Image (cartoon, rainbow, N blue to C red; front, top):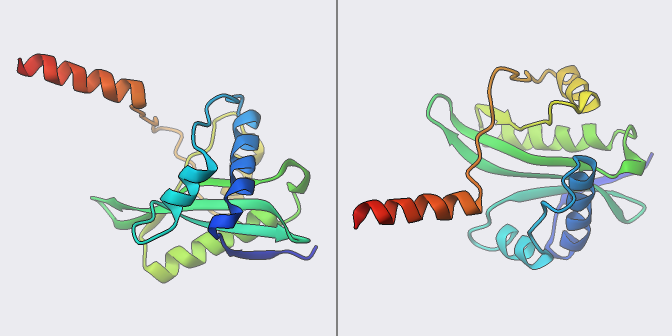
Length: 164
């Protein structure tokens, strides 16, 4: 199959959002996506971009993405966090996921990162097997912790109440 992996540009963000939404539906969270194309364009490009993104094009259409950003580990130093590696449903098994992951790993190596990390939902056995086959260590003994927007607001309200 003929495909091209390249750095995303702002004009790619409508299709990137479609793939993000497709993943949310696959992960049984169809209403969880709150970002907009405008958010992706603002947050991903410019002097202080919040993320980087590679896209996989097949016949001129984006069929996969790898969206990632830098983090810092107090144990290791520079780290890349792969937020999402998404391949459209119809293109899974085509090699696009491997090509995108390869691109992220090469990029991280060029940056000198000490680790590349990401999450995978525990029931997605095909993805887990894919990552393990690539040499990734799936940490089954760690729990992901989130404080969502409502939780942040509640936390701040409690802080403010405590200061009164």
